[in-house]
Each structure stands twice: as C-alpha cells, then as structure tokens.
Length: 178
Image (cartoon, rainbow, N blue to C red; front, side, top):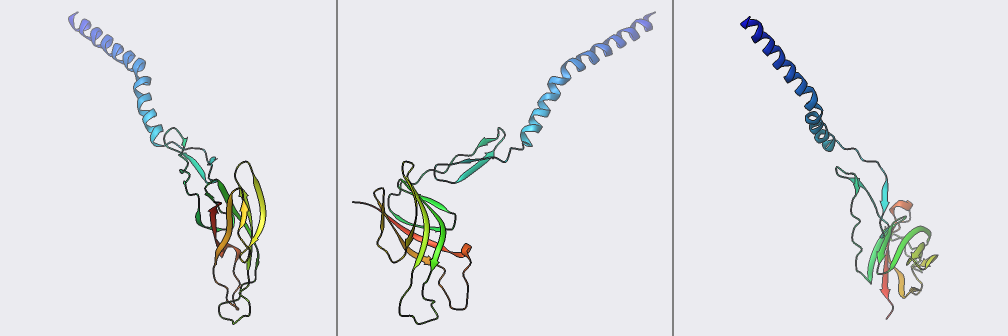
C-alpha cells in the first residue's frame, strides 16, 4: 500500500510539474524569441529625404529613420558638384542638372580663345526656385541675395578624348550679397 501511495505521489508531482511547464513555457520561450527577433530585425527599404536633399534609410531594432545630416551654416564658399548632385550653401540649394556645352580649348592644343562651359542648374530657397543655364565666362548670377558663378570645371579637355557626362565636376562659387 505504501508503494502505491509513493507512486501516486510521484505521478501527481510529475503532472503538476508538466502543468507548470505548459503554463509558464510560453512566457519563458517568448523572452528568447523576442531577443532573437531583435538581433535579426529586417527593416523596409524606404527612405526619408532630408532638408539638404540627401536621403537616409531605416536602421536599428525598431527600424527608425537614421538622423539627417546637420545643415551646414556656410553662407558663402565653393562647392563642387557632379551631374545630379546638390548642395546647400546658406539658404540656397544648388543642383547641377546637366552640362549644356563645353567649348573649352583642349590643353594639348594652342587656341585663340579659352572657351566656356555652360551648365544647367536649379537654384532653390524653398520660397523661390529657378532653373537656368550659367556660363563660366559670364558675370556672377544674382539669385535671392546670393551671387553664383562657375569657378572651375574638371576634367581638363584633350583633343583626342571625349569626356563622359558622369566625369564632369563643376565648382561653383557662391557669395552672399553685401
């Protein structure tokens, strides 16, 4: 009789242990699953456009957008842009849209004139926007209190080589009107 009682107690103890295991296991296993999910988070591929025109993606365990770069407080200076690039100087956002013309004298030729480069740019202050072409040999263009001009163009031209559009970089000089 005593052995039967011990066996019944052992079976009841195992049943209680099994019930406890099934009741509390989802909570315990959930902790491990959540930790595993945090380490292997995959964020969507959308992007946020920042005020300076750059873009940031989502990152981290909660897929928050990364912080936008701080806008520089530069009110005058030189910026170098490739086609399709933009930069902010003071309140003016400058975008180089295209190279309209490149009639510069090749460096391996002796020319009578130096020639010019004409670029199509978009100027934007939020309140005002204008797309226009400016030439490297004209006076600085006045836009919303800033003078904009072409300071230099790379690469140099050679008589026997074509320059691909993606190779062009134009340095613009921007100065606040006094």
